[in-house]
Length: 427
Picture (tube, rainbow, N blue to C red):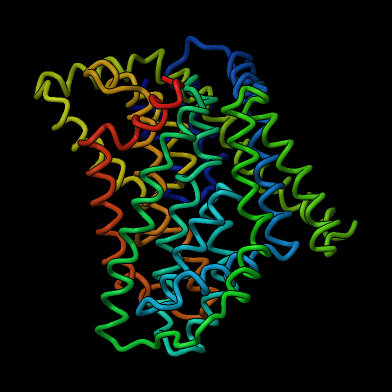
């Protein structure tokens, strides 16, 4: 049954059928060929796939990110980053990376990061003298930080699917996310010096620096409020998402005074469209996981791998390679919803902590958003810069290598993912 399921699934995807419908058609074809299961069970499983309180956090975090990106917060984040990184060679490139780290605490989405930060910074970098393919590569690769530093939509999906603590995953992503940002600054700075990109020579007065920090306070408070509420036991991640929406509305109306009914409705429509796409995949992925479990695919896979090696370090390396290759051609949410329930039990059976593996998995599929040939963030960045995707594929390679290095470091040094959750008593 597992062979039928994945054969049909990849067949329909290869034909260009949209992901959710390819999964649904693969399910229907598998049940028809294999037999023994009523189609009514399929629809029950689809309903159960999103019949979860936790999934409410997905549209809420998406809406909060849309609101914060529309009210003017991006300009304040960029100003702060320019002030902080103005002295570094390739200052605007590094400001781009730092801005992604700040915005990660607002949106939780790599695609939203690329659209918001890239829409403002890619044209600015090109105008200042940076190569357009380099500008896209920096933006796309740094957008990967979005789903790692909390809040993270990917972590919400993972937690809702596998029952893993979302709060612990949020905290587990802090250090890897910071390492990604610091690591990406290395090739950005090196290439900026080598190619003699412009350096910001503007001297900021203490008054200007203070003004930049004060203007950015609403952006800096957003993750503090979300994580503080969760860690303080005041609210769950889902309830924290609703608080984030309320905070975004208050800031937009009373601080920036740029949020009106038209913008609010527009943000809600965009959030519904994005959420619909994610939750439709989540709904169809549930019966996929159900059939995979019925076909004993995780058990068979675990038996096959452990017959070759029981060394968890080698198994983790093989999983990383598999997921990185998978990320080059398959949407991150699809990879998560289909393969996390298969691979997580295998890793845990070999002694890998569930939170540690969750961070490894999220890192893997998120890196795929910036890797050629089908990285979504690369597509968005290339469209903003109006250059062929083929040019950005080569430019992004140094940054992808850094991200893979951080992935391997996180894989083989569990404390990177587990130190903060342990310190806070979440695991």
